[in-house]
Image 1 (tube, helix red, strand yellow):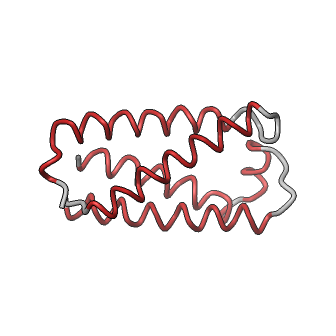
Image 2: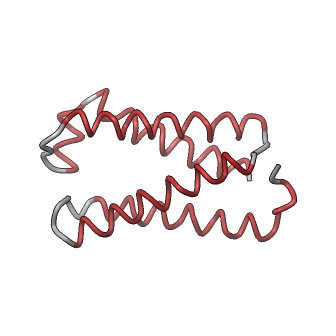
Length: 120
């Protein structure tokens, strides 16, 4: 479980920090946005979830409430990415993120089926 927590935590941290560090390159890859404040809000929330993941990895312990947030975030990103990419509202590059989120969810499913007793 610890490796997945670290990997997902780092992925969320990198994707969350990117718009704050270099908004121009973020927009060049993901496409122009109307509301930059919304980009930054989603980024800030992503950083918050990354903190939870990285703390859980460090402690090698996860609580059910944290797991609910982690899984909920991945499902949310996946659905938004797929629905709005197919509606041509966001760039197709978001489908790459959807694939990553799907991998995270699959990894969590395997871990939870094997180690469900480790969840507090």
